[in-house]
Image (cartoon, rainbow, N blue to C red; front, top):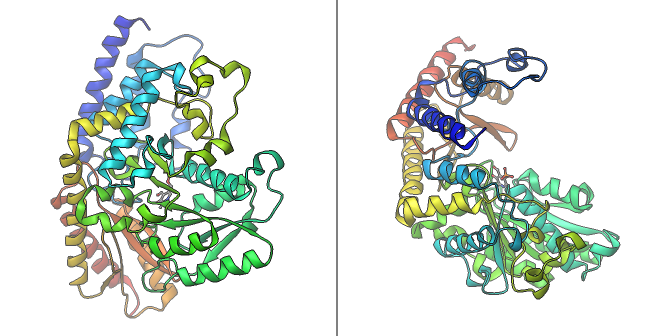
Length: 484
Ligand code: PLP
């Protein structure tokens, strides 16, 4: 494709995306296709001869679009938001256009230096501690996902706990990771990848009401494990759990970690960006004093399309100790003088995209003010929704709900717990297959609850209102079909 052909098709693509975003609301939120339908509608083998770009765009519209679930639909309330905004899409396009692979400073200095700048900017906007800044002992780095970031944090923690021996000797001792039943599954995956195995993952009890980790039980487990010869390595506290946005008591957990010299990792994948708003900074109480590492995902709620996770550490030395390897083919003067950052040593893969560009375009387009307004809109709509549900006979809403997620369930008076859960799942299925919204579910104490996460770029009050009306309507219709 020549630059002139690129210009022509590029304009078509930008127009296509603009049209899509302008009318995303007209699509059914959740794709209604059956497994295998999309694959069968496409040729089974690759083309021998090149095809016009228009043919690709035509198949995108005709074949692929029915198989797309519209995460940018204003009535997408499933999972957490995965915001794609205009400036982020353009920033990502620029990154693709430059085609830079920024594994080392020397392979594109701007890629590294802009990344250092934007992660420091974001740390400042979130009021994260000064020791997370790159000009102190720590620093931030953009990763592909919170899962990768937590794995990297665990590798750094292992390096520290093993006095630097793990890189050479492997996991020869019983290193342990502490999570709760509410911690994201990526931590267990990280433990498996790092060689701790599931036996190395210790489950700390949670408060049955708030679902927050119990620091007293953590203290007991750490003492027992240390006495039994294990090496307590890392505790993962979560600020805003995936299931219900529970917030672990980071300061109390941090105090226990300090007593035992254990690495404290804070997973704030969804909720962390809310600290842009001063009234929500309490979320990070204890982070400044105790956290060794902290992760949040601008690719969830901060208007930056997937993928863009930021991991900060208070001390980059164990991270670099765990992950730096300098083969001959990567040696260069800047690296050997030690005057630059080579972010390849801060992550699992070698290669890296120029992701800082899209975070930069987002921060500059919206400014702190615009970003705060976006977070506040999601929180306010969620609070309103929760008040409607709480006022509705026959529904229960989970408290607290400080952010954009509301968990709730119908009570189904006449049904036992198992049948009531089946009815709630049926209600969700009816709502999702209607195409007019997308909800997900969780289980708390064995019971099903519906999750409605608000925070989409295009979501307005009318979408939340309409969704709630439809939930009430479907619930009433389903109730009439149930026994009793
Ligand atoms: N941690 C928490 C608290 C999450 O909610 C999620 C995803 O929702 C993750 C980690 C995993 O995020 P990622 O998809 O970036 O790996």
